[in-house]
Amino acid sequence: PDDKVEQIAEDIYLTLTENFGDKITAAQFAEKYGVSDTTVKSYFKTVYGYGFKEFQTKVRMEWAAKMLSTSNMKVGEISEAVGYARHTKFSKAFKAYYGETPLAYRRKSKMESAASAAKNKEEQSETNF
Image (cartoon, rainbow, N blue to C red; front, top):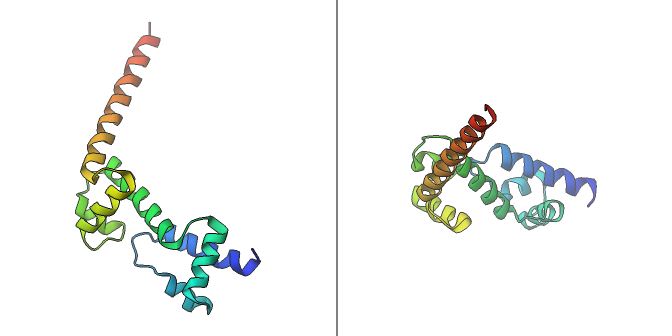
């Protein structure tokens, strides 16, 4: 890809990863760079290997998973934080991405975290003898 393609793709990448909670469309970048939204999507896919919407969803879902695992925020609050106006739409997207509901994911990650902490504590006590 030439410099223009890489510059536009990088701008999109940075914007989507830093502002994952905002409503961002390919049309906004098309207007900014004076190209069609199809061209914007093509540039992004050429450089990063993901479709525009696919990458946006990936970033949002990864942040949501992190928040579910590390915070006590409600699912509705997390869905808003990652750019979904309705938590039902978020929950559906999350389940499609991870294969389980946000609450099931949270329960599982909290249990895994507790099991990991217990294992680490057990290993530390064994090395103290």
